[in-house]
Image (cartoon, rainbow, N blue to C red; front, side):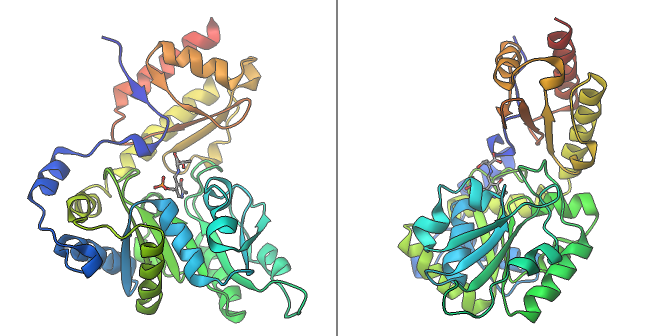
Length: 344
Ligand code: TLP
């Protein structure tokens, strides 16, 4: 039987048997009435781990981000974000459509914004101009190849934001990857922002779910917007139970995904593909196949013939994402197949 290696995303991870067990046994209630003890347990654990006052369990990272913007901003406000950030690039213009805000995009260095660049675009108080109401950062940065925010930048951005009374939201879909890569506590990484969203359904393996974290008042308000968007779930403890396993059992093993990504990345470089090894800090490997004269789509089609799935990130760019469904032998298999395709 052909080996199947799915490197499209860490969203493809399947729930572990421990998760299935926990889901089967979960105590549940109606969460819109605040009566689901498993959801409450997950929200409390998330809040404790990130050092935030309160948490809200939401169906997706997208909803977590959109709720953050809706709660922080008023219609007509402006949000500063990175050009390639998920919140701007991949959320179906939710900023405009749902939150009614305008995005002021800045292009970061490998996805990382500097305090100086942000300062340049903060609006003055002027009746003609929108109010800069929120700064959004993405840690790790997906489209930049899984890069982590250096602590010095986070500190400088926080200092600036506080001095101008502008809140910071971190899209921390993969914040645990950053914490593992930087050998930092996730609580420290979350301390540089007012609110943060975390995904349980990516590298942490839960089938569904994210958490939005912030102050008590912020979460009370976000809970109303969650209801508005149809995200008030009933016996959601069934899925929150899997999220509890994510937070308690699945964090430390992210290190292995990072090692696998590094091994893949250096092999790709050796095969003559274009890759910035400096961006391979976590579980994402973004590379360019133009040097071997193949279009991304053709390379993907060839990989598919060997049971390997990945996504194109441009005409010549491909993204590989490692996760707990990918083993070391899978990585070696992918390297051998790529060598074969390139030589052929
Ligand atoms: N990212 C997905 C796709 O949507 C691109 C992926 O395969 O990487 N923030 C970041 C940084 C993300 O990478 C994603 C998902 C989200 C938010 C949204 O999470 P979901 O898919 O739960 O809405």
